[in-house]
Length: 337
Image (tube, rainbow, N blue to C red; front, side, top):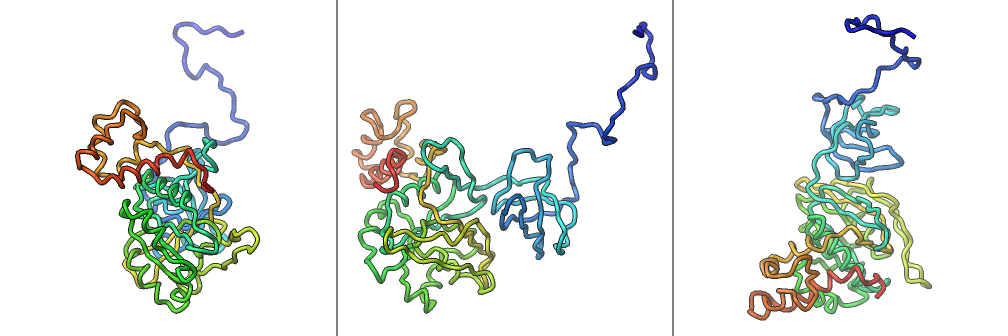
């Protein structure tokens, strides 16, 4: 065995050759200062369609991003072939800071959260007034997810020709959520489209709703013909619709000031395992100051909660406190309750 003295030279030290012939690993990552900016429109089995200027570019996530995944709505930086030509593939090397995130879990016991949409301004919660019957618990869960993720909620009620909206609107009146009521006849004639568009102008809006409520029909009425998707029907036995949207997709709205709709797959459950109840209170600015006297880790639905005294002193409407507590307790209830 060779022994080295105090004055060894680096040239005397033998190194094991790299059999693969590639460069050694390094923690120094390239900066990609010349990367182009784009927006993720769809994600399909590891391939992401991005809008780069006026071109659709197919890309994949760079290995250096590790487990960080890009989702529809993400602002990303891309390098490589950005021509958008057939059989070309670019690389996503950076994912921008997200202004909002819509998350869900499969159920309340599932710790794995799924990011559905990023950077949306508002969440349009689409529900039918009949065929299928409305599910207020699912609406509550979508509202909680919107407040938790930094999105403004919008309630879109469809099929008003089958049932009146009064009872459902009364239930959510104290929340002050904006709403639009449509009927099937109005959608077919286009009369309801303008009312919906007024709420979407210049915004990125994610549409969510369970199958059969008319979500895809509404999106089709809003977008150009070549971007439309097929629609399904409601099963007469189960009262449930058939999934016609299998993945989220961002679609530009024609003749509008930069508006986008993001059509998401129909949901039958909306888990809230990831939600921090302390963030939901931010959506109630009239109640939030009253939480200063709450005990630590207060659930806002217990005997020592300071919100009761806050409301008794007239600082907020009791209906608002009831609505807050109903939303916060929705994690303990199933959507079918």
